[in-house]
Length: 361
Ligand SMILES: Cc1cc2nc3c(=O)[nH]c(=O)nc-3n(C[C@H](O)[C@H](O)[C@H](O)COP(=O)(O)OP(=O)(O)OC[C@H]3O[C@@H](n4cnc5c(N)ncnc54)[C@H](O)[C@@H]3O)c2cc1C
Image (cartoon, rainbow, N blue to C red; front, side, top):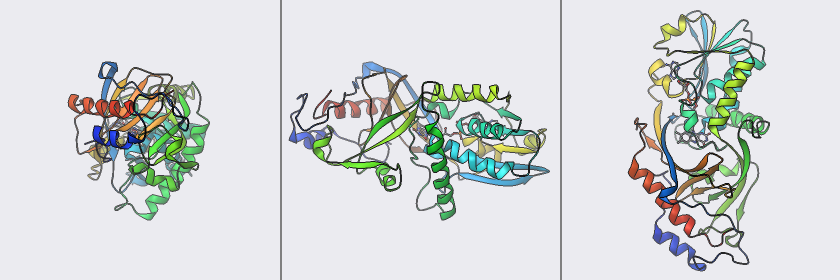
């Protein structure tokens, strides 16, 4: 299903854009933006990934495993890139206090790499044990927007997990700012959000600066649009650089799937961080952890598109490696093969939408 933000039909676009003539390039009161050329012929790649979703939110918790200390850090749903530094900070604060000696990290997605880096910064030798390395992780599939989308369900989350979420978000927000630049493929972009989308609800507290635009201030065929600035990471480049950083700081990486807690108990390190994402369902029997499949259509890059959009047609994140069009949120769907019909639908809804901009740059 398309992000439960409902389909954006050709009819609704035509209706909403009735105040302007489609095809007019500029209107005096309209801030022009470069339209995305969402023609199916520009598709360069289609991908699907499984968000590690828990409706009660992500797990940062310590427990004993035989004579070891095990600290969980998994289940971040659609916000794992966003929460990575902050959640890793909470996990390392929990695990490293009073510890001496080397540390094991399970997993080398964004959560494992961030946890490893913070443990190294605190002076501990780290070995990562991982079934797969970037680019073969869910983290590589992510759009890379700094925005905590679909991290929990409000009806199931406890005040404690919400507080944990806020603390993680706050640290991540500040930490990502020092990653901005070409090395990590991280940059700021103006972001436009249709007011009635679920993402807009978060905006009362996050991000710190956002503004409801008057219809005349934006080119979109929509009544109500919010604008805010946030960061975007080109996930492939970011994870590559983070892997290098772990190695430069003396970290070791061993490619190996851990089949059971007994395998973990046999590791030489007495402190283990579990950052296996969706893998925690099988490894630790966490049945609340569900896949939430997301599919992306990636179009040829358009450097002139220097803003992001989220709303009726889905979302559009422009990255140097392609224009990312999302998205879906398909609970309990395990297949990582993109569905051609869904991909075509995502492209078609964006094509209609961008063809109806009231003015263009
Ligand atoms: C389409 C899509 C778009 C997204 N967009 C965004 C976005 O814009 N912003 C955002 O913040 N988030 C986004 N997300 C969510 C984000 O991708 C995830 O929350 C995040 O990648 C989870 O990171 P992780 O490190 O926990 O898991 P993973 O990246 O899955 O890494 C898990 C690691 O553990 C290893 N592992 C698993 N099981 C075992 C085992 N038994 N033994 C050893 N190793 C094991 C794996 O090999 C892997 O290395 C998106 C997700 C999808 C699918």
